[in-house]
Image 1 (cartoon, rainbow, N blue to C red):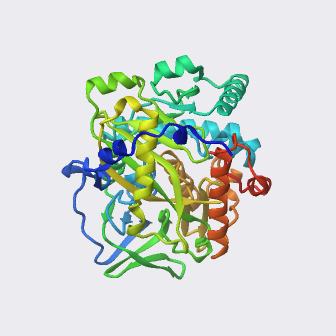
Image 2 (image 1 turned 120 degrees about the horizontal axis):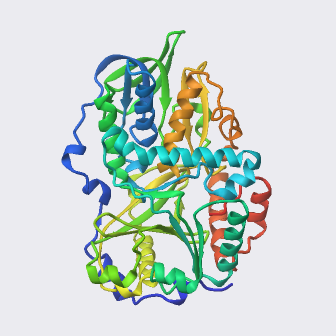
Image 3 (image 1 turned 45 degrees about the vertical axis):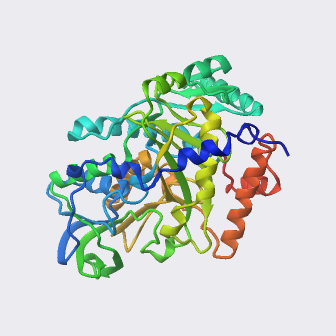
Length: 481
């Protein structure tokens, strides 16, 4: 087995220790949120009536509430959130808002090849609508349509990039640019870069917590009621009149419900094996000086995600910090989501080391924040959809780390499903067919951790996939980032 560039070019341990020494274990995005965008909303108390009740105050739930009011301004819409708006994945992610609804072209082609032209068109239209949302609703979530750069950091990845670019050109895709070593390092000055592909149209950068907060504000301005710190304990069917969402101190009786609980256990028994929580880790630097910015270039401010199975993603914020995350993706036995899983010193050290391998010219820069969050992973690596309780309940989950953009699409799908509408969204195989569930424990932990080990070995063996990965590929369960 070979070594990766991050093992061959490690910075001194003292550089890593200095950079992490004063970092806060807190989510930067939430710390950066103005008080006016984080009002302390009351919990649900007593009985309420609604036309639609939404469980979950993240992107999926907030887009659903907002779009529901656009479809029917007179509808009574209530959102019930267990913590605070945008508290979980919606406030912790990297802010990459991608057009892909299928977790990338390769994953989509492997599963729904006949539908990919439609899925890619719908994905671009969805991204366009998110970009337009700032003007449409009078909100600001710092959206920049920068595109995304995929750099090769190992020699075998250069051939992958050339093939990717050639296929894109042959397929008539616009804005897919191949950069050789000189060109890619002129764009972003990392000595680890050997080549790159810049997709210029299919990704934007945004402020994650501001997106959630602004969606909530826009929804409330249109009459949506949002209740925080209200953990839903049950979903009850009310004869033919609808459903009830029940908390410890209140209830909402509604004609219809949407479940947007992401990584947390579903209120529907049928969905409790459909996702697993995988922890992702992130560092945020202090703001760069003008000299530091000049040393790395990056004037086009693209999002960046490298080509490894254990990949890194990174981007520049509005105030010129660098977010650097990824690499480790950690599953804990029993599908548990716990606060203690969010602080993992060995991962912070690895990420900091990889950061200074990527940008050695930034030695001396410090990290201000470190945090983690759980990703709702499905076996098809993208969202699945469905209805329950005689079409009175709709759900979407399993976004697998690409939910920033696709949650808006999911909101439209769920509203269509509740309305029993047949259109180009609801007739998609991706929407109609449920993926395979994950097995119960201990099989889930054994399988997931064996897959993680195999992906790491592939990164050390020029991308070659072992028997386990090839078997999962053949079964439609393989993942190629």
